Length: 472
Image 1 (cartoon, rainbow, N blue to C red):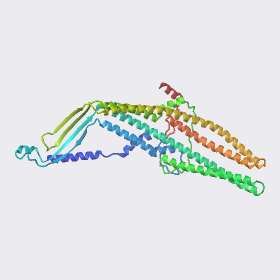
Image 2: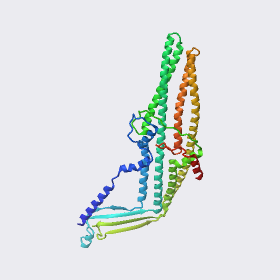
Image 3: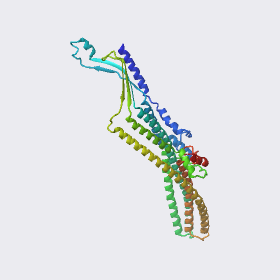
Image 4: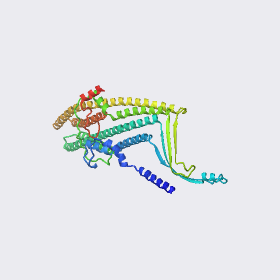
């Protein structure tokens, strides 16, 4: 009967153990998806390759589908698991350890039946063991470091999302720029094709020279070659955009409806916003604090550790069979560790210095990114003003060259030159307007405000940001 109870208890423990092994993977993924999706628009209906695509829609789909973001999410989840593991160091372990022993019969009990009762050739024991082994200083420091590492991985997850979204935005405008260039060139090809046909008729009538026809045909071929290159750039860009968004392909029309707000971006306000928003800066701070905790953990190796072990026998046949429980409390006081603890302390100091240097480098990198993005935005604004003047002047020059050639007062070369200048000016204007959007989004990223909503500004309020910086 006693053996039957032991078997029943063993089966019960196995049932509990196997039930505890189940992992709800959907809930695990939802842990980091909640961080990624917080405050972000829902992607809604699944994206179809032929759907019209705005920048906001592209960012939303990438936020939902990007494997790169999800990989960072798994890093955050693993950091949370390590935090739970560090906390589990303070909890006891309980195990059911049944054992069966069989040995050859001994001859010690031949002359003494009393001895033979204690030395058995087989026995079954069913003990439940519990153990606790902690080093208070080290384990507490490790728990704090694990908590800070989870905070760091969360910040890195959000920073990785901003990096991916910026790549999506840059690729989106690269495709738009290449597509717009191809459209302008396609229109130019149509105009030049009609012009070449007209000049051939005029040549056959003896009004135009063969040289004029050859020049027009050469420019038409050059324009067609440039259009082919632009179309290829657009196709390659769409393939890259689909990869970044996590979809099969992007074949629909890109509908850019994003407008850069007008504001006076001061460096003081921008750096204040970056200090509040940049997730990689928060991650660096957490890394520095975690390195300090790890240093405390290394010093903790010089302090005593405590272990406690308890055993309760549910069934026991080994000698002495009438003892139902045992306990052992041990304290370990380090005296000589062959330099291992000292080496761990030195390594912890090195990692702390390393984290401090990385934090300093990151702050200077952020300042450089802000200055670069701000200068690019100011530069493209100035260039757009001049390009608009150039486009207006080129159109007027083209009109005059057409009129002069029609009246016989100019050569065809003058008209071709004017047309080429107009084409280049129009393409420069198209590129510059997309460059302005990209420069603004880079500035938004540099200040930590880039997400799928596109609702944040690099400086929500210059006065408030400046006041915050002064307060800090």
